[in-house]
Image 1 (cartoon, rainbow, N blue to C red):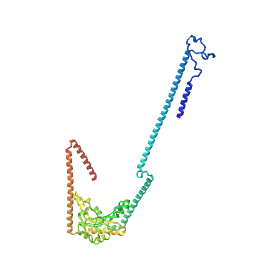
Image 2: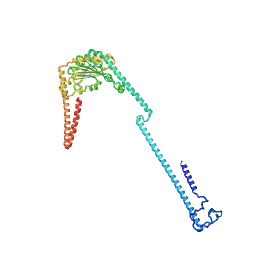
Image 3: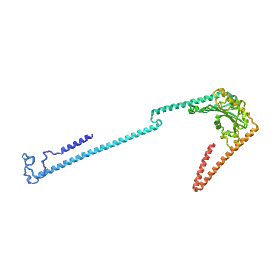
Image 4: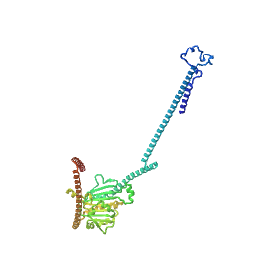
Length: 463
């Protein structure tokens, strides 16, 4: 296209130059507007007036005019040529500049578009790397991991459903095996809705009342957390887990004693469940009892009285199912070891007569029935415990010492709290003394608002 344009321009220039050249016959013609003198009237015809005028000599002024006209024509032709050449050059330069500018603009646009595309591509790659950074861009590995994750999710959900059904079947097995015993011994089983109350996938409660020598008989079935893959399938290799039942029997009346018989490997569990047992007891020994047990009691008389006959025989025979047995007439929990603000509360706290039993649930129904029968036998055995006056006095002295120690410790804690409070109040007063009246007023308003918020929280808790 550019070559064609240049060719057309040169062709136009050539045609204009060709047309600007004068004809040969018109070079000698001079047009006079008026004669120069009288001689011109009588003169001979000029030019082509006749065939005889070709050799006629022209006057000198005519030659000068012809020279001037030829020069002016040459000048005009040169000027026209120069102007045309300049115009063509300008046009060519403008076209070249426009083409170069358009090429530069196109190049810049292409470069910017390419850069934008590259940036978008980089952003897309970064987005993909961000989404799939954990597989480092390998889509095959990513989809493989997604499939594996979905399979694991299905396994976890299926395991939870199967585990719940398994634990439910174990709880029903326990109830069906022991239901006739409870029906014979107690007047009311369970609550109005059902015998067993499902607390969670692995936790069930059972309660029965209406028997002499006890207030109620409570059982908690703490089964293995089969729904948890980590605990059941992996942790089970390092520590033995069993389906366990915790039995708690409440009494109206129980003689002053604390006795705890437990397996040696259950020491941490006993310390966790009865954190204050070490305050009121000491280690005892019973030669007839298997060495797998430890005994803690507040007197040797209670050990000899309880650990004998059927109870001793049972502990030695069914030791593989027994975790611990605890008889106490006082609270062994930190939560209940508080200073009562009212006398009525103190009476309620002092009334804490319990028998605690922990058994592994056997797979054999006969062994399970034997354990339940033993727990019911212990209701009457604990109710019949009677200690000598000497033992009771010793137990009272021991408990008074412990209570005094607890009171002293609590008093120290109170004093320490009061000291901290007094120190804080003193620092606050010093801070107030350094403030201006306006700052003190703002500080008091802020403190009052804070106290009002605390009072609102206390009211909500009380409701």
